Image (cartoon, rainbow, N blue to C red):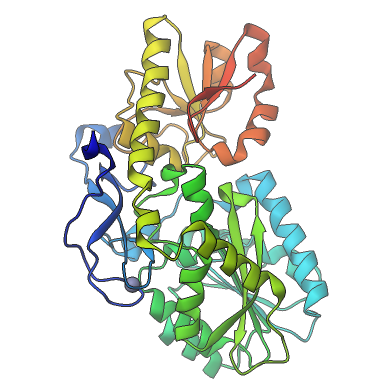
Length: 420
Ligand SMILES: [Zn+2]
């Protein structure tokens, strides 16, 4: 059985960070539609576009990455995800704002700029404290929602041209932040160069993104989708920032999105902010865990294949026993999971989601219908499969009433499990 552990090899595209040719597969999840391409009933009978979901690791700089198949303009033009619909994410944003406001002395005289500011869910907390804010958001529909709540927002993609343009207009942020945007940027070098051009000389950049170490350790292959181009270790992201004259001076490990990093960067010349001990500690930790060696990355694919088999065994077993299974959360990660595992309406009756923008639509690829959460009370399923497992506790609280008829919660990751 040596075959199962053998890494697949192929000649891929050029590394988006260092330009080297990509030759090593991190994981190949087959063909999948864009994870946020929810379908209307009319669209079900029409052809659907599938793209390879093939993740590479660069043997030169060790950045884990997906090839760009669709332009960001197409992916993000009418993005269905409104941040304000998740209560735990709002609490996370509020506590971040309190922390950085105190630490970096933000007030009415300091500018805050957020990249991919969504519907203004985070900037609203700075705004309430009287700190001048500006959001940069490429999706027109969510930017409109931000403007309606009084958050100044420009609809545009960010990169070097935008960074220079804003700086020329006198916008030099003391705090430049981006949560869950760095991983979604196809032209990574252009984006980081843009931040360097925009940031005030004594300014601070903070960025949050899922940590590759957690993705691998907890088997979170369902966080891989086409909109998510890069999967960062600390050592890889540090190299990208250094190339553009930005030094990482602090880092925190966060529980969000299954385990994220929040990095703090400043201009290399701004040595008044010293590099803190957490930087060296995390770098040393990652190198000890194998993130400096290609071989470590090649252990992931066999693990993902085993997880698929375990989830299918559960779904088939439930079906054979005459049990009903429905899903909670029409999130992007659920779409990767269901498409990769080949789970459609034959195994999963429907999913529910609180967002009215998704209800009465269908999941891409699998065509599973999306309903209002009240549907669960009406149909009394035996199992509720929690697709956004990172919000498991919140969802189990909201849906606790399924226990009244003996309903049980199931998570697919890290291993299919029925929860007590
Ligand atoms: Zn590279």
